[in-house]
Structure formats: structure tokens, C-alpha cells
Image (cartoon, rainbow, N blue to C red; front, top):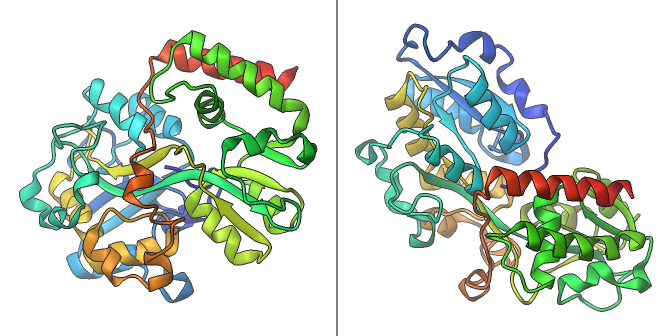
Amino acid sequence: MKKTLSIILAAVIAASATAALSGCGGQKEDKGEVNVYNWGEYVANGEDGLMNVIDEFEKETGIKVNYTTYETNEELYNMLKNSNVSYDVIVPSEYMISKLINENMLLELNFDNIPNYEHITDRFKKLPCDKEGKYTVAYSWGVTCMVYDKTKVKQKPTSWNALWDESLKGDILMFNNSRDAMAIAMQLCGIDPSSCTKEDVDIAAKKLKEQKPLLKAYVMDQVFNEMENSQSAIAPYYAGDIATMLENNEDLDYALPEDGSNLFYDAMCIPNCSKNKENAEAFINFMQKPEIAADNCRYLRYGSPNKEAIELLEEDIRESELTFPSEEYLNKCYTFSNVPDEIYAYMQEQFVKIQAD
């Protein structure tokens, strides 16, 4: 899942939420509440003529939503693992879902309470991280690709190699996170990024070291300012966010690497400290009502896994290769797995060394 990592505006939705939550060992929550822990800016909130999804859920069900946000999967994991706060619905990414299942931190869903699950396309049922389909309902998905400035990059890129183009030296941006940056380098080196060894990390690190002298900066949220204001030539980022950039600068375009890229997804789950499981399932079901899922897709510009929602979308979104790449293209993509902690730690260590040198 990818989405902007430091936007905190969505936390304002329910500033009093933390006070309303109780520890996993505390008293049972009131049946009229559901505690949702989600990414920032990851639900339609009434802007741009779209519905306020949280308000609509409360009106329809009478269930009060205590809504708080996190910035990374690791923050979500640490909150669940090391605090006494109880949540009912969480929306982790694919590799984190694997970790949570492996550590018995999720509850099995009662799909009798989630009839809208029938709207989910087959590709996003029984996800690779949840092969039996017991714990997850897909929320949104997308791919990583490149955004570039047509006034600076004269020919549409076809490969991640464009991020190593010496003619663009000093005008290239790169992911400022080890998982995404290493994955791009691995793919160029013929390594499957969905599972890797320390030796694979070393090979990718060598490739990234070759790139560093060509870079303007390692970025995450800063990419919006850089690209929307034509301050850089090219950057890798998440398709939904690139769609937003294109709306704000007509000189920008996107490129899907012809050999495929990372297919990522987030899914709604119920952590095992939930005190309002039926309310959580009601919330998950509501989020997959076609009209709700459609407005969330319009707001996020990430792909919806809900086939009925897709039919409700405007043609320019429904037919966008950026939001909904073809099945043929998706079949070329890889999905992150939950690599062992020691491998991930090594990956981060090597990435920090590259940046420091």
C-alpha cells in the first residue's frame, strides 16, 4: 500500500479517538462503536464532491467510528504488538498481512457478515498472503511505475533503466525506502524481489551505488513538490499518487516498466485484540458497497478490487492504464512477501550505507 507516508490530516477526523479506545485486556467496548486504524488520507472524506464515507457509515448503521491513522506498516505492527490499545479494523499491506498471520495476530472473518465480499474480483480473493482467504478483504491496490517530465525526458521510458540515465544526472529522484529501492535494483539485475537472500541484497546494493551519483535526492512525499513544480525530470512512485501529480502538471506523464513492477495491495483485517468483531465486519462490509468503494477509488486513484464499483466509475478512471493496468501487465508483476526479519534488517542497513557514502 502504498500512499503518502507523512500526511496527517486524516487524523483530524476523530481527534478524540485514542481516548475512546481501551486495552486488549480491558472492558468490552460498547456495541455501538468500531475502532478503525487506517493509513492517512485513505478514505473519501467529503472533498471534491465525494461522500464522507465515515459519516455515511455512522448514519446507516448507528455505529460510532473512532478513526485514527498510521504512516507505515511498521508503525501499525508496533502499535498492535507493544501497546494496550485495541483496534477492530486495520488495513495493512501484503507483506505485513503475512507477518500478522504468521504471528497469530488476526482473527478469522465471518463472511456471513460480509455479503459484499461477492463483489471482489477473483484476483483479489485468497491473496498470496492469505491463501485460504480467512483473514482479509482487499481494500485497494496499485503498481509502482515512473512519473516523468516531458519537457526534460524527450522519449517515454520503457524500463527502470531510465533511473540510471546519465543524461539526466542531477535530475533523477529515487525512493527513500529500502524495500522499494532495492526491489527496482533487483528487478534490473534479474532477481525476483518477492523473495530474496542477503546475496541478492548485496547485488542490488551494488546497482544502487552505481545510481547514487546520478541522483538529485532520495524522496518520499517530497516527490509531489519536485514533480508537480517541474523541479526534477523523473521519479519512481506509486500509481495512485502519480495520477494526482498528472492532474496538477500537464507536462507530466507516466511509464509502466515493460517487464512489470511491484503489484501491491492493502486489505481490511480484524486484529485479535478486537472487542467489536461484528461491528468490524459491518464496517468491512460497508466499505465494499459498490457506491462506497467507487467513491474511495475516485478519491484515492488506486485500483478498486470491487468489480461492481469499477462499473460505476467515470470512463477516464475506469479505462486508465495507470489506475487499472491490464491483466496481461499484472501477470508480469511481483508481490512483496514477508522476508525474514534478519534479511529486512540487512536490506535497511545496506540502504543506509549507500545513502551515507
